[in-house]
Figure 1 (cartoon, rainbow, N blue to C red):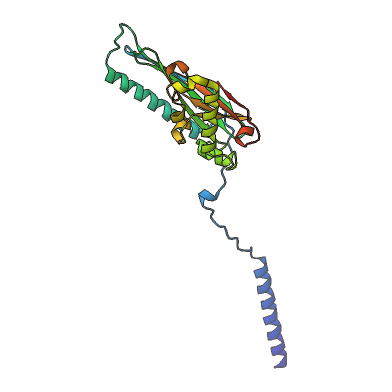
Figure 2 (cartoon, rainbow, N blue to C red; figure 1 turned 45 degrees about the vertical axis):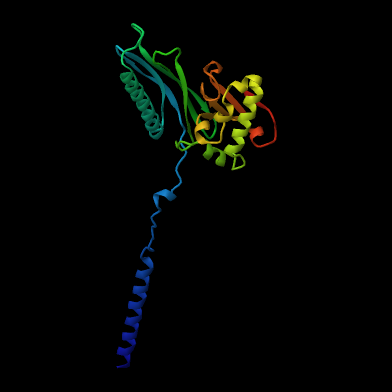
Length: 250
C-alpha cells in the first residue's frame, strides 16, 4: 500500500513537471496596439519637377499656360486644380465680354512660372498676363509654397515655423511699408502703399523664400498705378529677426 502511494506521488510530480515545461515552451502573447493614422509621422518628400504647357487656340482666344509637373500627386492635384480653375474663369469672362472690339484680335492669357527651392520649402511663382482688349494686359501673381511633406503653407504659418514665432505679419507689413516708401520717395504719395501693406493675409498672399530672405510680390495696382509695374520687396532674414536694417526693393 505504501509503495502505491509513493508511485502515485511520483506520477503526479512527473505530470506537473511535464505541464510546467509545456507552458514554458508556449510563445509569449504579443500585444499589438493600433496607432491612429494622424499620430504616424509623415515621411518628407523629395520634390522634383518638370515644366509642362497647356495650350488652347480658338477663334476668339488663345491660352498658353506653363505649370510644373512634380513627383508628388498631392502637389500636382493642387496645381492642376489651380490651372483648370484659372483657365475656366478666363474663358467665362471672355464669353461674357463677347467678341473682341478690335478686328481679328484674340483675347489672350499667358502664364509662366518660376521655382524657388530651399531646404524646407519649394515655391512656384506664377506670373499670369491677361489681355481682354483694354489699353494694356493685366498682370497678376499666384504663388504656392509647399513644405517638405507636400503641404501648402501660407505666410502666417511660415512665420510661426521658419522664424519660430519671432516674426509676425505686423512686423512684415511694417517693414514692407517703410521699404516701399523709402524706395519710391516723393512718388510714393501718388500710390496706395498704406492700403497695399495693411495687415491682412490678402495683401501678403504672394511671396517666396530663399535661404537668406523672404520675398514679397506686389501686383500692379496693389500699391500704385499700373506705370509702377509690379514690385518685389526682399527682406533679409537678419532684418526680420531684428539684427540688421538692410533690404531690397525692385
